[in-house]
Length: 587
Image 1 (cartoon, rainbow, N blue to C red):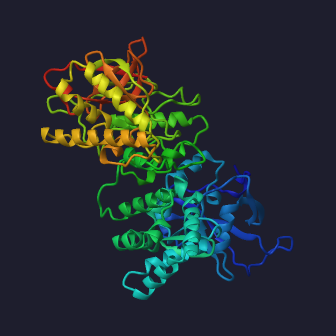
Image 2: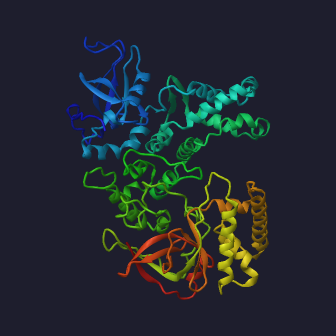
Image 3: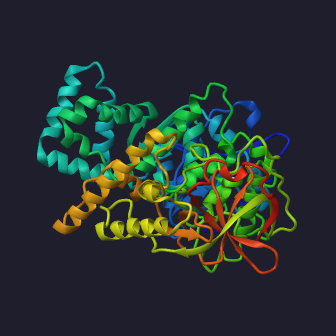
């Protein structure tokens, strides 16, 4: 991306845990005549992490490689990304030198072996820094205004005069309009949307957020966000609160929450890499999708947050011979060895031409991945493949593209309905919703497994993926009433050409994606991925929370189609008695 700087770099000592630091010379430092006064001057020097050096670590977005700025490094002219140069310029002092770590200069990006070693230390580099500055970029789009009011709100607790200042300012329509636009731009900044910053932001001991010349402490950002959540303001000052409701706020809150969880862990075990990857990469209901310049970094960038990163000893791996697909498949193998069978929930389709060569059982983390319809495994209420009377799962890998595991074939897909894929951010399409419910009802009426008296109940449970736990018959009336109320509301809204009023039931419908109602040969009713086909089989893997749909290859193996809700098989029913457990090989 940037010009080669290999001549600048001397080998780092691995035993000494050496890193490079930028020594940013002050403005008063001597400069050659041919170097203009506004060009930054610095040197690169080696330092051992064992020596407790005091330095500032920069957390920033690299930006486009096409936009560069000149810098003098060890008396040689170099170019660096414009965003990094702007950050260093803000740290530039008139008289004092500043020690800085920034990956773009401190790592020899052309040396893949060094890059592997340095990236594997990045958690410690940020954790051991005297301070970490989260650089959002130069001041623009009202950012100074946002930073000012963030600090003001964080100081409001216990100060009547500060609170009055805040309320008075936000009462004026022109101020509200300016703040709404400025805060939205603040949340849309590239920094918040980059994956690498999650680790950097999370592990810092002393964290500051900088935007142009404005600087706030992390606690001030948290204080402002907490201030805006106070019930008093939500009720009494809704216009002020709404001014800070950017659709991109999810990015900011996500990294803030991750940092707070990490810092408050009090010796508790860190999350598994599986959970860290899922929580970092899977889109929320606002379709937020974090970015990296290199696809393999979608795994490598969060390694430092996982308590079991040592189990993935080959990571990070930037060797040219290792493809992004190789990394994703190796990650999936690691997760499966740990028993995370429900990694399959994150295998979503259709895949692009690029990733069709990947094994279907390995998630493609480069594509936007949506939350499983059956929820993340650690939150799921289901237990389709778990029971005390069944031997534990045994997983092997016959070759690099195959995984063999134990499962029970339940049935075969006989027929399916239309795709149900509502837009999470828009009102429900009333006609599509009514058609969806009608198709499920028709399958229930055709099924020998569903009694006439249970058609409404089963339709209701299937339609929302049993999102509300059905723990006993006491829930029957709750489901049926919710279903009937939703049908009435949808029909009325459709007739009047209005948006439907949301209820818990319509919300449950809306949170699904890429589903088709289906019926199996023996009458099971459920929701399958939208690319399901007749002849696909439904199976339950031992240890899995949910059943899955597989497609026979005709060669004794299967490809994965995806997660499925199968009514009557979500709570261990298939494991009762003496089920026929088979070895199923996926490719």
